[in-house]
Length: 418
Image 1 (cartoon, rainbow, N blue to C red):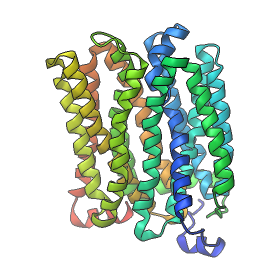
Image 2: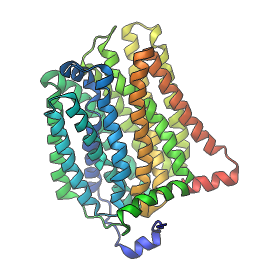
Image 3: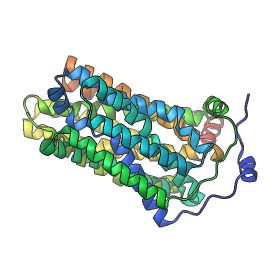
Image 4: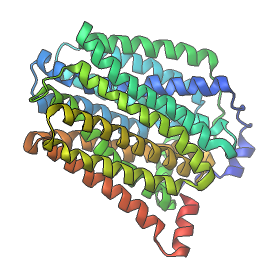
């Protein structure tokens, strides 16, 4: 069995990473935002996609599902390469692949082609998961949470703007223009990264097979990693169930709103963007465990509050849903930053693999939420989606509370590892 390289082994094998500058931090934040935005362009325009391609709601719902599954698969199989290869070259290669996948979506002649393109978008958009650990590598340990939070702010702004721009652009120029513009933005990003990103020395020389195999060892070694992946995955179920069904719900009675309105709901994501640096600072000062519990609890309350929408007139329902979205976006993203801070401290030489395992759990939850959310909406309406999201968030809170209430000796061992 191949051992995981230790910190000391890595320091003997590779030179120190370049220092983190404000230029690097801004570039990493922009790179994370533009790349991860590709995962969410489809969500506000599902109603338009289904009508144009004459596909049922359940079939067109496979677009975000396959995108999220592709992302989870890419994180598992491709993101660990950041520990073995020059991260700069890996980022550039994936950015070019993402450009091609977005162009394929723009020119897809039918649903099967669009579904294939969606899977490829998910695979190549994992460039974001090569960018975020780069910030952790470049940042000093004392400010790692703040640096990760700053890059995550760029990532979350990408999610926010993707929904808004997608909805508005689809109304004006059609859904194909959304993917065409996205391809152009990622191409520009690739040029900026090529010119401004420093080289990163690999932290391990093991083979690809051994690299992937070592992820199983990491999973077994660190209970904190398993708890983080499970809790974030459960939060992702509720998060994805909401966003994957929102456009379809708003398109139907009593709202009859178009893709622009659905995209405008993405403005609620600004709360998540604000949560990232705040969560990073609190994690640096008070520890990430506190942030995970507060974030999961806030998300559960926000999801549950939407059950009261049925008692309000249409305008009141929209206001309640917007306020709830602001709250759960804040909670989910704050918890994610805290989990990343926690996981990155486990094994510095294996940050890409640790990050991969955390995000595999998260995006399996995303794909599951998109699938279960569409089923819940079809069978039980909006209350079914709200119930699903609330139960999932309460599950995440239970995981974090269980970690904090274990016997002292066990808790210290688990938290030291995660």
